[in-house]
Structures are given as structure tokens and as C-alpha cells.
Length: 228
Image (cartoon, rainbow, N blue to C red; front, side, top):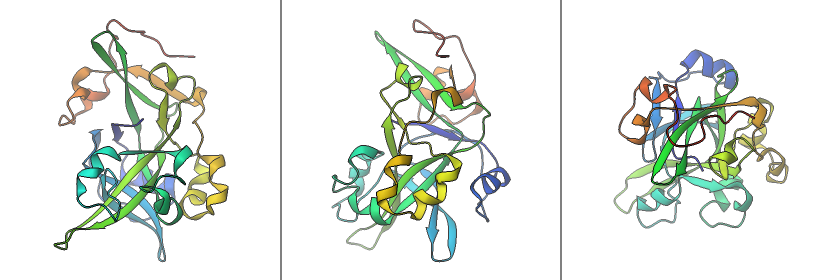
């Protein structure tokens, strides 16, 4: 799954990487958690545009926004079957830029957090879906979810799922390509292109957002090396 991630590159780097102009001002974020606003990129009639959305999908038919707590992730393998994601998969796809994400390895009562990123520490783009929800009183919330797929052999040492990290040449296909062509890109990111290391337990606090979250530490009571 993907329950926390980071976005620490500046706007100029994101603009170059995703080939999208007018990136909003960005402050480094070291511990992005569900329910918080996340930056997304969508394809509109005017081209690619940036939007801030709440992380945790709220389907248009939902009675209240609390359902978003259960919809922070969507399994890529079942998008066509699930009512919560079926229409968004067809009509409302987005990219969610990130620098990396966190996962935890459990042994006994202790959970060691790990940070996962790509080898060159370039930005990544995760496949996402979005929705626009309107309350009976007129409140409007735009929200999103992150797609997951089976973990590659490196991530699988921590969890059996991982976010769908798209290759750069598939960004445009994901944003507005035909759905029948998308299964081939909703696959695990290659393990040999990823770096994984244990980090400070400060990331466990979803309200804590500081560079300390990324500091490499010695893992306690669990496997210390995930290099393959």
C-alpha cells in the first residue's frame, strides 16, 4: 500500500520532469499523510494543469466525506470492478508527484519505518484517480487516491503492495490514453532502480513533517539491509 510519502523537489525540477508549466509554490514535505492536501497533475481542455486535492477519494455518490479514510489506495487489478473507482478510471485520472514513500517492517511489537525512492533521487509520478464531491449544503471537495500494484522483490520484503510508479514515457498515456492500453503500465516499478533504507521513527507521527523523517538510522530488531 502507500500510506505516507514525500515531495521535496522544488517547482523547477517538477516542471522539467513532468513537462507541465506553472507549478505552484512548493514547500518541502517530508511526511505527507492521508487527509492532507496533495499536489496532482490532470489533463484538461487547456492542457496539463496542477490541482491541490485531498488525499482519500470521496466518490460523487458518497453520503459524507468520511469514506475517504478507506479509499486512500486503489488496487490497479480491480479498478474496472469497484464502484468507487470504475468511473474515475475511465474519466478522471491524474499523476501524483512524489520524491519517495514510506513502508514499515513488523517484527514482534516493533515496526521499523523505511524510506523508498528511486536510485537517482529523481521525482516520481504515482498513478492516481480523482473525484469531485458536493455536499447537500454545497461544499465541494476534490479528492484523489493512489493506485497500488503487487510489490517488486525489494518492496515485498516490507509489504506485498506498492504504489504504481509510472515510467516517464507513460505519463501522457495514463492521463488520457484509452483504458484498454493501461494495464501494461500498471505494473511494479523495477526493484533494481530503487533505493531502500531504514529511517527515524519520527515519521510514525503523521503530524510531524521535518527533514529528520528522512534520516537514515540503524534498524532495530529487524533486517537491516534490503539491498538485492
